[in-house]
Picture 1 (cartoon, rainbow, N blue to C red):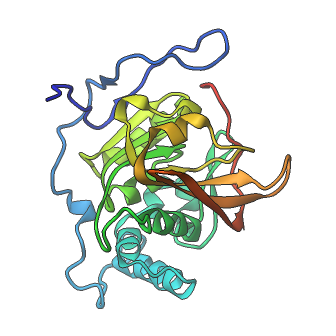
Picture 2 (picture 1 turned 180 degrees about the vertical axis):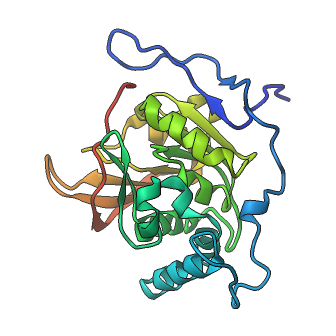
Length: 275
C-alpha cells in the first residue's frame, strides 16, 4: 500500500525551468498559509428549492438559474453539469467591472491575455467528459486533470462532478489569482499546480479524465500517457496547421485510442514552459 499523501488546497508546484524552458518535476509543496479545508462548503451546497430562487443581485440563485435555463435550451442535458453550473458563482472569478456580464454566455478577459470561457463551452466540455463510456451513468468521475487553470472557474465546477481535481497553470499571475478566487470556496478536492501543462502531472496519474483550456496542433503525448485506460480526454485542437480549432474527444481503451472531432471552438494557444 502506498503511503504517499496527496496535497491539500491550495497547493503549488514550483518546478524551475531547465535550459529548454520546460519545468522540471519536483515534489509538490503545500502553501503554509492555506486555511483548513471545510468538508461541506456552504457556498456550494445545493439549493433546497431551486424552483423558487431567492435573493437579490449577483449572489442570488435567480441569476444562476437563468443561466442554467439558457444552457439547457442550448442543448446541455446532463443534470450533474446543470446543477454544478448553477451552484458555482461565476461573478467571483471575474474583475468587479465585468461582474454584471458574468452570467451572460460570453467569454471575458481575466488578464495576461487569457479569458474565462463562456458558460456554454465549459458546460459542453464537462458534459462530454462525463459521457465517458467507462463511467457509470449518473456517477461521479474519479481523478481529473485540468490543463490551464485560468481564473479557477472550471476547476470549481469540476470539483462538483469529480472526486478529485488537479489543475495546472503555466502563468504564475493566473495561478495566484485562481488561488485567491478559490479560497472563498475552500474546496478540499481541488489541487492547484504551477507548472508546464504540456507535461501534465505524472504524480497524480492515471486520470479518469483530462480537460484542456488551450489548444495546439496536436495533443502532447504526456496527456495520453497519463490518461487511465477507460478514461476520456476533451481538448481543443487545430484542424490543420494554423487553422481553426475543434473539440477533440479521445477515449483510451485496452486496445488503443479512439477519437473524434466535434464542433468548432476558439481557445488561447497551447504553450510550453512557465511564465
